[in-house]
Image (cartoon, rainbow, N blue to C red):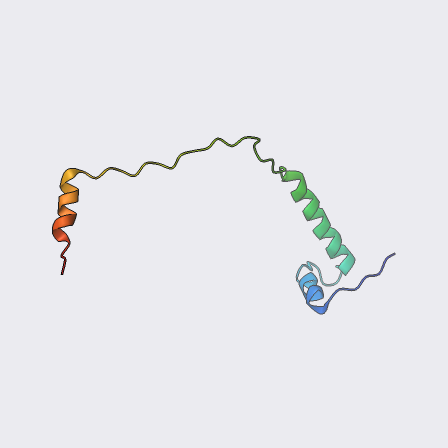
Length: 79
């Protein structure tokens, strides 16, 4: 059996995972966390970036209609 030390802060976090305070030991809690991680790993898909990402041009700005340009010019006041 191995012995290792954890900080007080880590130990408090570990205690928050205790389900049954009479039966759960730190070893049981760590074992339960390892099981959860292993199950989660089995569901993860490795990230694989596509080999070639096609370049996409940004969408063109919508053209203003003629009357919209005049409305903006009319509302602008120069001093």
